[in-house]
Image 1 (tube, rainbow, N blue to C red):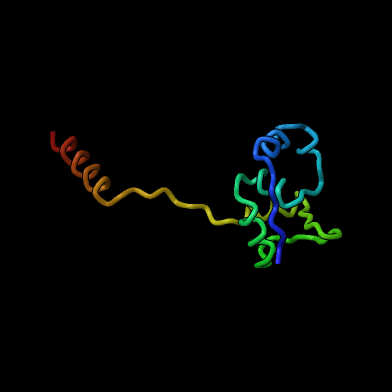
Image 2: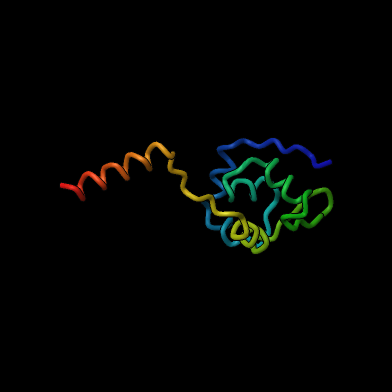
Length: 100
């Protein structure tokens, strides 16, 4: 079972903005979560499910930044959702302008 990480969110956010973070080749769970803007549990689940490659270094799980970037690119793109009522109104407006 993965260990739960407790961190101060302000220090994690500060770490994301510093140039050393971008230059790192590997990230721990907390850094990977901050980099992606998700919870630590989401990263842990992806590693546990085998969708994201994690490497064990002692008691820590390390994720290579290139693997994390490839994982993010592989995620499905969510299409924009337009409710049917809005589509119907747009069609009615376009038909009204064409008739005028």
